[in-house]
Image (cartoon, rainbow, N blue to C red; front, side, top):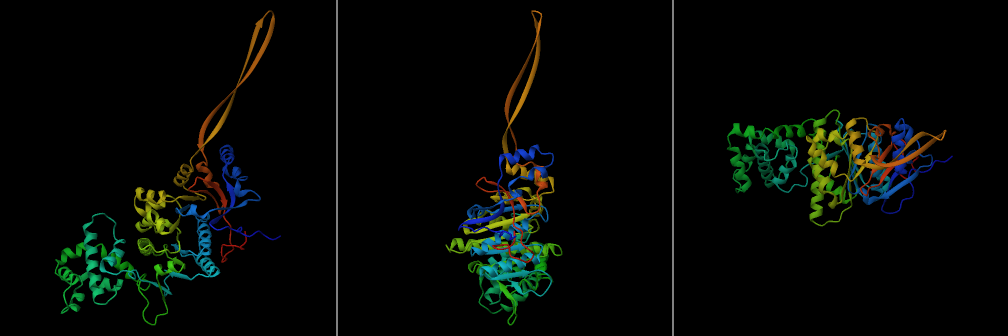
Length: 474
């Protein structure tokens, strides 16, 4: 027979999450009493034979979304499901994919075509890039250029090395701008080692400016001390301007068929942008590019908010965030919502964030700013325990029966008496015990929303290469 479409007809302001229903107290009780969680899941909402479609208010997902699960459990499918609906709403969608999945790219492109939206992709795959990205595109002065690269240096507060490197960058870029030259990573890699001596030579005879005066002081600085103070900067420039990123991170030349990626314009035009990176072969460059892109989005959100611009909502979806999480992403999680930025980030384990960000406190900042948690199958004990704690406790009534029996002798007769006493007590038990997260099937998850709802869901499964949307098979 004909299969039902993957999506129901949705009213405005609603978001489809899959098939299933509300998680009930009886479902929790079944998990606690079952010999194995897989047996108890058989009759729960998402596995019911005629599971119903679940749609919630889209505003519940505006407080950012976290997806946690083992590889293949369904996280990327959730990102695609949310991205597809954002495309249909006419929103800007930006996907950062550290794996560089061709299938994900094709489905996003198909969704953009179906919604009548522009689609751009930036690929770090070693081939000649069809799209280029200039990190200095929206920088109007040397300080802004220096800020763009400072996010990639060691983030140590009040670090004199970083402060000195920032000052050198700001001076060099400002002089370049005053001379009509756009800053470029390859050019900066040439100028930084000799403190911009070549740049100072071209400024000879020109009217002195504050930037030129600062450049003269930089050139006259003790070279040994200068080399030590700019040590954190050179590896960053070499990484970005080297073989991996040198061709990608520069604007197209005249006559070049490549397209220049402008994330600011993409949002204004509700475009879909896919950023396919290569964390397996180039992990450091992948992390650096993701940091630059998130920082660019954060600056765009800040500018639009301060100027009071009404722009389409921006959906930022980060797959495998444990590979690319950064300080700029934390800024978007903490402050982006008011500027219309919605972040969805996926992790294989909750420990991935602490490993990438370098501290438990930073990881907690990211997790604490996720209003909705989608918990897929999990293999590591720490993630299971944290997920159990996240879903909270459920009061369960426990009944116990006490039986007593006695015999009495009197008047030559024997009599027996029996009594049964019933007592009730309340105990708190986890709504979902940690072990149960290991029994979830592919595309199955428990979703806790900001309003307290706990849902048991099965995501729709799209055929390879097909967009995950209305009319795709269930």
